[in-house]
Length: 155
Image (cartoon, rainbow, N blue to C red; front, side, top):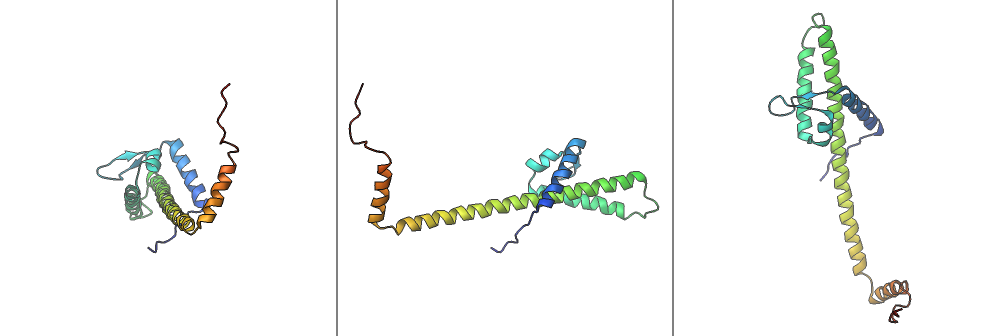
């Protein structure tokens, strides 16, 4: 499977932290991620939302921004300008969250693949040992116990 490697940089992480912190402290509510007009906060976006849900939020934000962009610049009110700037920050935050979650999924899959290959390697390595090698290893392990052959003396 030739999947594109996701490069979630330190700068991406720093920006995500900044935007998420702002959303947390400002009590930002995100609207319209799924069926109906659901509302959620930054905690739910980070910990409870799947990538598909985040993608819906992202898509809805793009539509809202496009609707404001469709207005001519002469009829935009200050409220609409502030709303557009706020929506663009939310869209950037959601986009970074999607990248972060995909990066973490990719890391987990890579780690799982590595552990499976390492286990297979160790198994093959163990299977190629001669009985003499195994005896030497067992002798070394037994030597660490000291003299355990004698019965313990009760006091």
